[in-house]
Structure formats: structure tokens, C-alpha cells
Picture 1 (tube, helix red, strand yellow):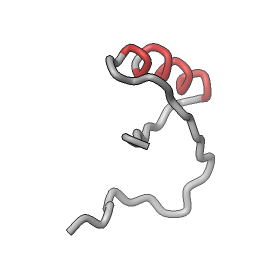
Picture 2: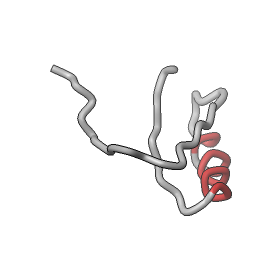
Picture 3: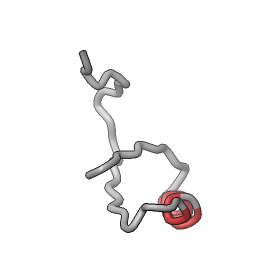
Picture 4: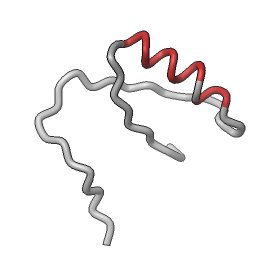
Length: 50
């Protein structure tokens, strides 16, 4: 992947709307892959960069 976007939405329809209305309108984005997570055990924003 070139970029990973994490977003929280109220439902699956909102995910589709975000991808179609926002991401696909960005110049340079040729395709997307959507993966959904339905439960999170631990949430952190630390990505471990030095």
C-alpha cells in the first residue's frame, strides 16, 4: 500500500459514502481496498517510529 487511512463511521453505508464521495475524488487515487474491523482489543496511536 502507498497509504493507510483509519476512520470510524456510524455504519457500513457511511464507509461506502466516504470512499465514493471523498477518496475517489482525490487526484492520484486509482483504486481502494476497504477492510473493516468490528471489534478492537487495544487502541493506540503509537506507530513506533524512532
